Length: 81
Image (cartoon, rainbow, N blue to C red):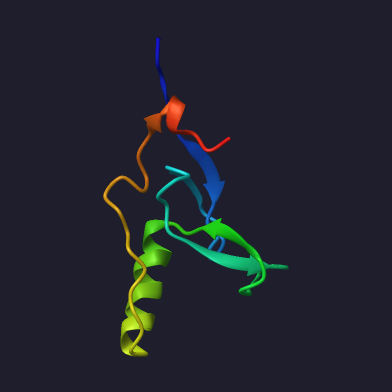
């Protein structure tokens, strides 16, 4: 029998708790609470991901994709751990 799962995490930008698909949720690299390319990937809530995309597009950069399943449950066999 197969089940579904989602990860409960806090947004690395605003701290709100989110339920997300760990394989597809938008994320940024953070180190010591600040964006840093040498840090680990941390999830963003939908609102912060959308705000980041507005800022990136204004700066002439590519938006971070927000997949339709980013905040949905996934089949448990797809969990990365």
